Image (cartoon, rainbow, N blue to C red; front, side, top):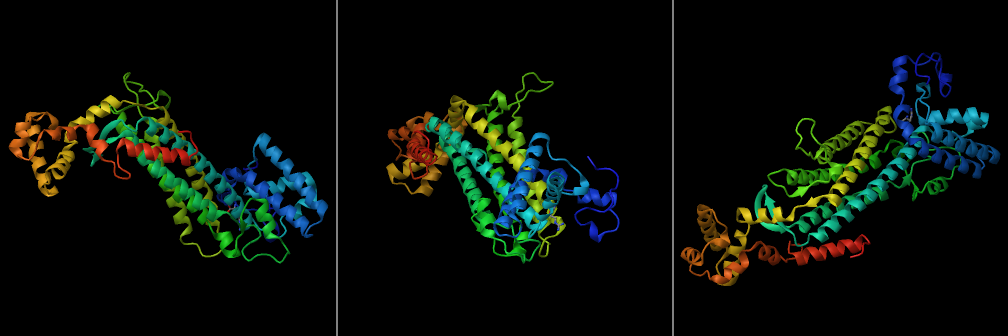
Length: 469
Ligand code: ARG
């Protein structure tokens, strides 16, 4: 650890400077404490670059081979004992190059031909973010599978549907869970679109203007799994849209996870009692023995605030920067690393919650009976069976609800003569429409809550996810 004292002029750009940087300069400048997370990407990009330099005859083939072997040795060291943090070497790029020089001698100095740390970091970071996108999509796939499986189990389980968090109409739990499946599917498509857009290679843009060496950018792009090289060197070294695209997708996704977490928090509360959370994702209280708290869900809800903060941080970092690279951009990494960590945890926590929660369907069904959730069904019956215009039917139903409420009974507990007292067109077939089962079964419009519809949506989603039905 060479992080104290002042060590004279820097070996990489020391020619221009007589004295070493002041202590504060060393500290503010050092990104190695966080960008060491890029070491795998840095080694991979350097190997691709060295191989291309050799193939193009820009450096000798044996130097290229020496560099490749040396980079493998550096990687093995990092793997075994971590990346050393020496602030004098600033970042992962100079740390690796300096260790390479210790291992293979002067040939290491040829690696930086026709590149700059500006295109190097842009490439490394893109590779890292691309992996983060893949991880998010894999995690979301598991969440989708869990949602579809539980929705299939509960395609016919009745619960109250809410608007304004007031009982509105009966729905099925399967329908409610499939609503989140829709959100997650959109999240997946946002990550997928971001991945396509970011998959172009900035390596070879050099400091900002390209290079006079006869490099082959298509070769390095292909070696690193990119679709093609980027088209403008100025943009390439100063673009962080790929990181913002990732953070925007992550922020939107975290917002959905937060809403789902909030559902579980409400459902797990005693007055609701709709769900028993898995012990593995709950905690107890140090003072109240009866407590089982939905901490994981609360933290998912909280993490989304931090993830949105990460997006805001990078947007504000970028918004005033002229072309091309400015050192502000070194601050791009911590928010992306933080968001990726929080998002991964949040997706995993909600996947476990959905997969393992015990839904208390009898409580849900009982709650659906309360709050006159089938009032709309009475109005719809009046329209369908008695030809009453909907506005008038709404009015008649209001009177029936008022009467039932004054007696403290459900709508379908009102005797027929009382209903006929409100409107003589009502007959006894109305009772067939007033149960919560009849209510959900009736809502078989495309995308509606009827168990028959929910089962169709579940089957479609299961097929799309490659699941057995
Ligand atoms: N550590 C730097 C970063 O992450 C690498 C690029 C440095 N470029 C420069 N012109 N000083 O942004």
